[in-house]
Image 1: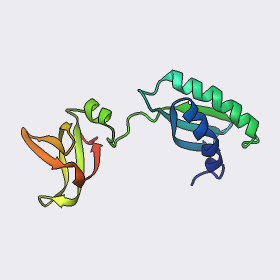
Image 2: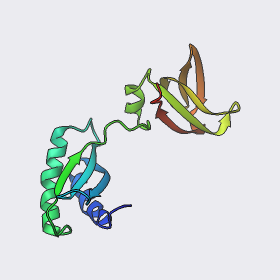
Image 3: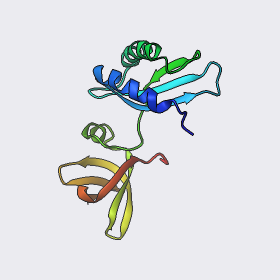
Amino acid sequence: MTHPLVPQIIELAAPVAEQLGLEVVSVVFHTNQSPPVLRIDIRNLQQDTGLDDCERMSRALEVSLDTAEIIPDAYVLEISSPGISRQLTTDREFISFKGFPVIVSTSPPQGGQQDWVGQLIRRDETKLYLNQKGRVVEIPRNLITRVQLDERH
């Protein structure tokens, strides 16, 4: 269950992140800990998210949170990066994960199949290319609903 303050915190954190070239990915307020921990995951929109991004966000957001007085009691602010998302969406991710095992979901099913498993070769403007045991499979991009890393391998 989401803590009732989370929407207000997101409302406050999103513009702060935006000014720094960052994006708020998720917010969780762990009130079962003492002191409570406010964890905010951020992503740098231009490059890999680094420690510097987390520190900049932490300093800027701390001021905004103190000023807004949304959280009345003591808490710990934790800014971090979400790490590798299982789902691939950006061109950069498709380049970075070339050769990795992926699961491609299509709708409607393509050739009687809805999920395709194989090594990611690449994607271009119209198709995604998979290596299935040495055989290249071409899947039209307009049918793809999701591409995610296959963590079973």
